[in-house]
Image (cartoon, rainbow, N blue to C red):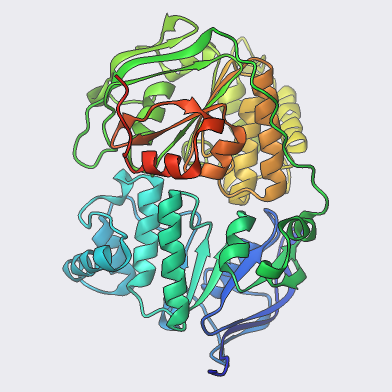
Length: 504
């Protein structure tokens, strides 16, 4: 048997920010060919630690070793020179550049060379994004594919993946797992960050658990039960119990013959979508990113450009809103959680107080054009407390929060308004198990209060946990909608790939 070789070792890594020790004396090692899980709640220090390995930030203390040699990694370029590749949860791409140009910039190659290499990966790994597409026109899933492709085109020895399966179908997740096993067999070491503990137990050889910036445990996932692993991460947590749906016969959201036009670089056009969401039910729509989800979300929220002005009709509680603005739709009772946290869900360099006001101003926070700042501050504190948002304070900017904590704030802001219709894209993307369970319970409580909820997500576990009815989008077309307890995971996966009989 080949002797284990340490690819990466961290010794006594410490990193502090004002009012917070993100990493506190952390040590762990990663062997050749090892797939190692890094686990912990949002704010546990995972992202900071990975940013240190990748050279994005510098540690205050501690040492890093690559192949038993002490190194100093001052930048991502340094990291890549040591054979480290990273797929960020928040994408590190330039929207105004093409896929090939983005990758070429990182690898110091010509875009034409990169385009040829991307074509080769299409066959080898079944990963593909059109090289000449502008990154700004790509969906979240396509952007993640660009990140993965960029890593695969390097001579990587260490690959860091942050929530890699969040935008994949079950079939695509299987392909990713096969890819990781192939890389592992070739000697590449993998750091796998995921909140899906079943994936960790299945694919990872070992795991390090972080809690509040410190190492709280090291385990072998395949030899540790999921319940034990959950307790190690955040203590005892009550699981979600979905009560029987008692939806009213009345539909609050009705979509009839909804179609949009596509233009170069745009998301897939919608093709004659017809569905409804009843009061007191959760309807889930699955799908691989880039199959019309953005067009559907834009059409429902009213954030759609004139070129795409949809055909068909959208009705809230029997009233057509096809020509209504986003403000008018919110006034009709709609809450909206967009797919993109920063830029759509929150303004990065604005405080949480200001971000709360962005969509909650109609909740008695304005009078004669003046802001009741004390009321807004109290609302912000309420959201933070109720949804467990970890933040330095209410005046912290949105971009100071971890991805999961920002997601909790955005969703909490919408739920706090008690909408009659909630449209949510990827409601628990990137949040930890504790927060996920909290969000699930809140969504089910909102459903039971009579709210109509539409969830668009690539997370099939999430959809089966929450939804009363379920379907999938593929190439802008909608599969049949069926009771979730009558649809198998394999069936849903087939729908996500477009293998469904079209409803008459």
